[in-house]
Image 1 (cartoon, rainbow, N blue to C red):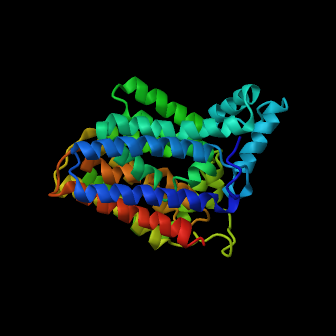
Image 2: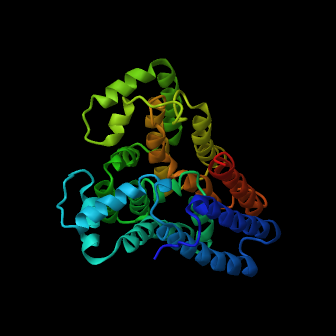
Image 3: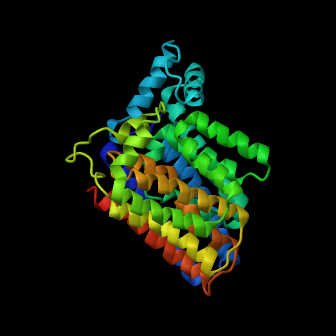
Length: 363
């Protein structure tokens, strides 16, 4: 059953208020305890389990409502399959196969809960593998990210696909990297873009040159952004995102029209953070290089079409990596004096942006 006692109009904002408590409690501990202190380890273990369970069930048991965007459309797809209708779309075949099979053995509430598990559990596994006993910090950065809630409740198959992609990057054996990334593409073919970036950086893993390419894309977009929209739209890919490139949006209903300097600055914070860690602090980690360069590559593509209608949908093809770009080196190596305190301040600032955009600005 869904969490029906919470009015749906307050459902999303309550999520952020609960996370506000978690963030403030975590910030408080970062300021008074060393990261390896037994008291701190006990705290992050306890609140980490709470956060994992809370997000899975709170997101998964939300009521079916148009306030969660495409959730109603996903509900209709599930009910169509439950009624015995065959798969009609060849797009994202693994997702549709998953929805079809699920419709045979469970109800719609359990289906959305399972979607939540598929979205969130891989992130826990990734953080646990990379950060060991400090996994909670990485996980918290992910669940307080600007677009995290939206892609668990609105862009559901895209959200699951991004988590499977991160799971693939985190694997040590190449065969498992390939398996999980192919599964991600099967759930949502938009993951081809970060996959192409990941393949490229496996052969050309040079952060400085990739950053230079990112700046070049800003100039190219300013000069000929519309031409890039037409070029990518002409590729003929059967994905709704290509259609978004040439679709006119109603400016009164959609704010992301024109060259979004605010979102570019937001994206640039991760680009700067990675540059600072790698160039200034000499942080050297192959997995981080892969992650960072893939992020910059995917974000550069979005910059080329930043003026298109609904370009925020392209932005998420890099933004889902942003939290890890920022926090990864801080949990792997001692880079600063009083580093635990700095993690707390970065966490607080990171969440303030999310809270402002999704709670204060919306209200």
